[in-house]
Amino acid sequence: GAVVSQHPSRVICKSGTSVKIECRSLDFQATTMFWYRQFPKQSLMLMATSNEGSKATYEQGVEKDKFLINHASLTLSTLTVTSAHPEDSSFYICSASRTGGFNEQFFGPGTRLTVL
Amino acid sequence: AQKITQTQPGMFVQEKEAVTLDCTYDTSDPSYGLFWYKQPSSGEMIFLIYQGSYDQQNATEGRYSLNFQKARKSANLVISASQLGDSAMYFCAMREGNDYKLSFGAGTTVTVRA
Image (cartoon, chains in turn purple, yellow):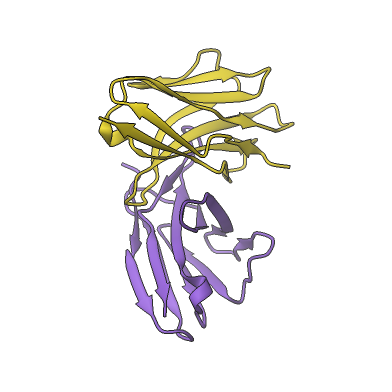
């Protein structure tokens, strides 16, 4: 159990376009999901916390108008990178938390975004 | 201040030997949880082991064990009998209080040599 999927796994887009990444919890309900960004050989940087039915909480320095997050249901959160530029190229990983247990986060497989 | 510190950027280990990955943490919350994740080149984050701040025993999961020294605020991961498939980046992370948010360390890259 506790499987999180992400779609797409890879995306290449032109500069100026918007890209939507989906994060789904497949076998549990996730009231809270997290979006991370990771540059090569670096740690995960938390971008925002997504709560079902409410606005996302963004970390300091993350542009909320650039990275739109929607958590419309207990199993789906989306991250839209608007007007993408080459510097937005990165590995984006989502995670979902499930109540109980260790309060651990279950991670999706990640999405590699390349902006040309 | 850094909440999680991993001071070893990279390590080499011979197959079948044990390796210890260092992790120190900083928190004033008496209730916290410490996690170790493995990230192979494919990018997926694989949960390895968890230690709660109130746990009396050191956590173990198969070949993974956590050397929890609360007074020193350290939570080192020990991988015994290393295998080639253990080559990956390893992250230490902490959750504080009832917050689900995780703070990650910089990571340690482990390369297992045949």
